[in-house]
Each structure stands twice: as C-alpha cells, then as structure tokens.
Length: 620
Ligand code: AGP
Image: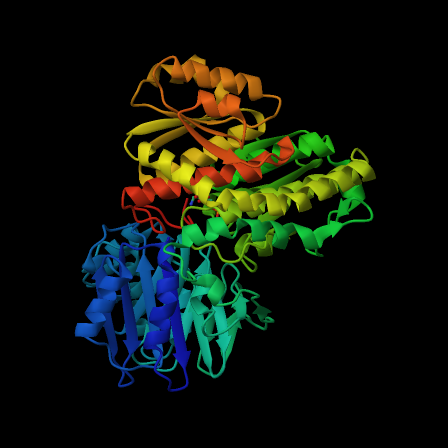
C-alpha cells in the first residue's frame, strides 16, 4: 500500500522535511518514489524514480527540484502498472496543470480512461492515478476557471469507484493542497503556519504531533495558515485535533540495524505499557480506558464471541478465542476477515466481534467490520494506531501501547495484541462471574512476574542458540512449524515470520496433523520447528519430535531451559523461561521471531521491507 506525504508552509522550503517523512513511510511500499513541488510561477515540477527512495534521492541530487513551500511526495506499492519510472507517482494530467499522489485502487479506471481518451486526453502511464489527474483537470477546464481545485476534485471523485487517499495541487492555485479519502488512510497534520498530510502519523512526527483524521468521503483544503474540512455531504465542518503520544525517536531505528530487531527487543516493555496500568489489583480485575464501553451486563449477555483479523493478527485472534473460552467460559470462533465476507449470515444480537489489527487500516478487516455493523453487530477493536479507521469506527476499542511498528513483519504488535487479549479474558471472566477475584489476582501476578523472565530470551546464550539454528535453517528450501493447543497459533506465526522475510517456504500446522499428510515431506532436507514447552500437549510433542527424527528430519525445538528431554531429542534447542502454560505464547513467539530475523540476515534479505509486501494492506 503506498505512502503519501505532503506539506504546505508559509514560505519555508518543505522539500527536505517531506523527504524525511517519506522515508519513514517506506514500509508502506517501495517499488518507486517521487516528489512534486509548486514552483510559485504557476508551474509544477516533478521528479520520479523506480525503486527505493534512495533512487529518488540520487535523482534529486543530480536534478534538483526548485525550493518550494508546497510539496507532495509518494512511495509506491504497485497495483495498476508495473514498477517503472513512468508509473511512479506523482502523476500529472496531460496538460501539466494538476498533479496527484494517491494510495488506493480506482476500480473503474479503465472506463474513465476510455472516456478521457475519447475526449482527447493523452496517457503516459498504466496507472489509475493518472486517470484521476486528468479527470480533475477536465473538470477544472470545464469550469472555465470558474471552479477551484477542491470543487474539481470532489466532482471528479463522484465518478470514481474504489478506494483512495489523495493529495492534489494545481499550477494555477498556488498555496493550496487538496486532500480527500475513501477507505485508504489519510491524516492531516497541523503545524505552526503549516499544514501537512500523510498516510500514517510517523511521517509527520518530526513536524507536528497534532493531527486531524479524515473520515470516508471527506476532503480538505489546506493552506499554510488554515485548513478547511469538508464533510462527505459537502458541508464545511470543524474537528478537534488529536495529540499523538508517539515521539519521533520511537519512529526511528535508534541505532538498531533493522526496525524489526528493535521491535523484537521492545516486547518486554510492550508488556508493561499495554498491561500494567490497566491492572485493578484490589479486585483481581482489569480496567480499560473509556473507549471500552462494554458493561458487566453487556458482557454477561454475550453467548458467543467472534474474532476476526488478517495475517499475524489472525494468529493473536486465535489465542484470544482460546483465552476467552478458558477464563471467561465464552465460546467463540476465529475467522479470517476476508473469508467472513463470504460466510453464511447469522444473527448478531448476542455476539461480540473482536477485530484485531495493528494498523487499523487493513481493508479486509475494515470491510468485515462495516458489514457486521450493518447487520447490527457490535465491534470491539484491538489496535495499535490511535486515530486509525478501526480505532475511530469500532464501537469499542482497546489500544495496544506498542509505539509505532515500522518493520513490515509484525512482532511487538502481535505481542501487544496477545497481551491485550489476556486482559480482555480477565475482564470478561470477572464480569461474567466465572473468574474469581483470587484467580484474577493470580493471573495479574503471573503477567507482572512475566516481565523479568523475558530478559533471558535476549541473553547471549539464548541468542547463540538461535543463530546456530538459523545457520542451518538458512540452507533449507522449506520447513514445517508444529504446535498444539495454544501453541498452534504460535506455530502459524513462526511460519509466517520465516516465509515473509527470508522467502523460505514454511507452513504452520497443528502438530496432530503431521501424521495425516505433512510427514510425507520429512527427510534430511525438510526440518521441523517444534514448540515443546510444558502443558497438556507436552508428551505428544515429544512423540512428534521422535517421529520426525525417525525419518531423518532435523528438529529445532523451543523448550524450557534445562529440559534435557527436549534438548536431547532435538538437533537445535531454543531455551525459554518456564511460565504458566497460558502465558507460553508470549514467551515462545520471541525465539521464532529471532530465528526468522537471523535466517533473513544470513540470506541478505531486505528485512524491514521484504519483497512484494507492505506494512498495511489497504486494498482487498
Ligand atoms: C505480519 O507480519 C504481516 N505483515 C501481515 O500478515 C499483517 O499481520 C496483516 O497484513 C494484518 O495487518 P494488521 O494487523 O495491520 O491488520
């Protein structure tokens, strides 16, 4: 999904600050990048380059854009039109009057393009965004100078079907940026005699921490000294700014070689930041902020809970379903959000749906949320980005306090989600009267006691074991991750981490399935990663290890430090601290994250920006 950054200031050159912001958004897409400025003399200037932002920087160094206080920029994840200079944003109309950067998909762009070609417009790219630029230009021209850029943009968008977050400039309207959004994220930053726009807040933290989020169908006219917000129905409206509590440093690497490594190592602090301030120690309960409005009566009335998410977040959602059953005696299901949209329609009256999403912008998850709300369903969002679409549109919200997660491979956000789901299970269990005060106090104590235990996962001996296993795993073409019960989602998560950053094929399976097919794959070139920490499934996991070894398969086992039975049975042993079985997911996921990181490092992969991926999948 693409990254957009724009700035309009009162005479201050904005090129460098926009470029800095663009670099923080590179995780959103890195197929090509570009920048456009208003030169002041009723002209627009554009520079674009295929590849990463570094290529654009080289272009700007050799072929500089003129200084400007009106700058828009874009880093692309290709949808329509292969990665190429000609398909890079920003795009102008064929007359060079309008320039646009866009994140989203215009589904009817071919029809619109055919109309525009019939009108005599000439196209240079394969993109849907160039169609937008020409559509806006046509409306400007049809207005014979009588309509402004904002009106032309809104009129053009009435002809568009699809998702968009866009920023437009017009050569004959200096001092004006027009922004608009539908289903793709866009926020406006409010600065001192300056206004900004971006796809995500981290891009602007070096400039401001005051933001206004645009809702679907809304648009805005930004000048240096003021911003006018227009509602979906076309009325001028006011909206309070929101203060973002992230600091610019949190959005930077802080000396780490990769964001992913920084974010893996932040996880013990994420536990504290997401959990500890919400403990109600005297009651053995949890207290959420006022964005969580579900009362004890609401929670007692529930007969079913449904979890929905995509990718890594669906793995934490699976853990959530288990925890709510275990501690709140509330039956539930976990659904892939994109699959939900094609599943049978059931009554929603006694159901709560929990949508889990780091970004709060995943198109599949948002569409499922809106479909459920249309059916009268109630949505609880668990999200890491304050002000995101999920955070604003869910009926209830639990924010994870992980800080910005920049690495495309999600790590600390998963950890924060599982932490929040533990808290939710305690809250719901206490509200439904099935979790005693004493048991609640025990669970809170276990969570607090977990924090110091996590440090051993980053100790030199633990890292040495991970690197040894990674050196082997980097040599294989494919592997299996196996776990049972609460460890099955961790097996899925470990497999996803490995495949998405090392490009080694990996599958996560419930360990009980191994003999029902996957065992046919096992040989000396097809290893298995096994989660074998003490719980109800431990003995069966030992059997799985023996079955793999009996077929010459190599085994990488996650086990409690000092567990000789597992250590002797495996070829590679990744030690973890012993914790109550229900907390094992928070512990066992970390060596798997570290393993995937070390394998990708050994293979020289682009760890923070793996090929073909983007941090937030804002198209279905
Ligand atoms: C996880 O490492 C992947 N980057 C991806 O599966 C991600 O979890 C998924 O796209 C969901 O994103 P969300 O949590 O922002 O909704």
